[in-house]
Length: 529
Image (cartoon, rainbow, N blue to C red; front, side, top):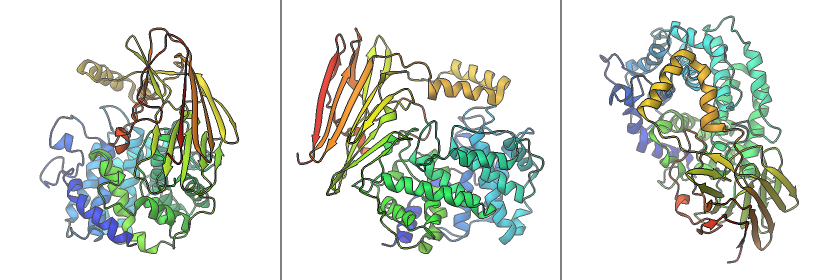
């Protein structure tokens, strides 16, 4: 298996798509900006600073990583870094989704990308480093050092790593919150099972983003805590790979359906389990059926593609892969509420996400598509509830190969933008800056205190014959119950890429039910059907 050739074929296919996002006109006042909606379409009146991670692609081209392109002007590389510098206001703030946002993730990932590149330039291309406007980067570093992200660990990790590089580059002095305090909090956010907290639970996509930045954090600090954290995360991911050699993405707390390779590839230089993950997750990267091809332009530009091309130079240094000894073993991961059941002959396995309302997946060896269940939605008088919602409110009872999930369904809603809503948001953001972010998260993401739908109980059991599901929904007069589509109603920007799974009929069928009275639904999946 020539993974280097596979990765390079994908990079060749996609690199022009990334360069198109950048303003490449040296005379333009927005030269180097990677937000095409801003500089070209002019449908946005501010640049989204997180997109400047596209500078990693320019570095890959300069280092001859992508066979089909070469000879990139140094002016472009400098321009990408100075474009971020222009986007930083005098208080060190940058925006991502709306003006005056003071976005933490844009600050964290922007500082990380620019300082990572600048640190490399100081060693190998000091003539480039001298052309970078550093004063705004100092503003950015000091602003970032004064803030702490506790809910999204991947953002926190990027912030800590960016600050570590900034400190090495003498861009940071007398931070309001000590870098060590931020770092300690980051490692404390890792559960003993190996996952980092992403809005209360594990998320494979964002976990691999965390690995990307942690391998660079270790390179700049030699902090052994990073190595231990990376290895725990790798083991967690390996334990979740299914009989079809795929991860069960719909179990994720933040609903991402991708993983990124750079951190895994770098770790594979010393960890054969990471090498196995790279092989099973990315061996078909150059095929259009691979999950990365469905990623939208925004996330492809600043996460997926950057990680892929950064991984290429390190692929040949990976150790021989090693299938984990525990792979194929049934396990109950109480911390995150995952039940994983494997058939004895390892031809199929099943998953339950108990903290997501008992969502079920079944993966089979040699099968392209899994058997899927996305729970239920309940409709009543233009109000919507769902069982497919990550929350600690679910009551879970697990014993052996049987698990019970009980609770009330989560009220949710769609958020449709409009000019008046955006006007109100801009006014609030101008007045409150980052203080408006917790309010938006409460409304669009967490929605606490609204588990007021019908009572729900799901009992799931496993044996060598297959999976049985029995559920009870209490009467809720005037309501209808419908099988949920794949889409989850918690808003996460990087979620909802197209998947073939959207066309699959739910394990629970496609029938609607009335809740004028209690209903009981029995279903099963037989392994030999």
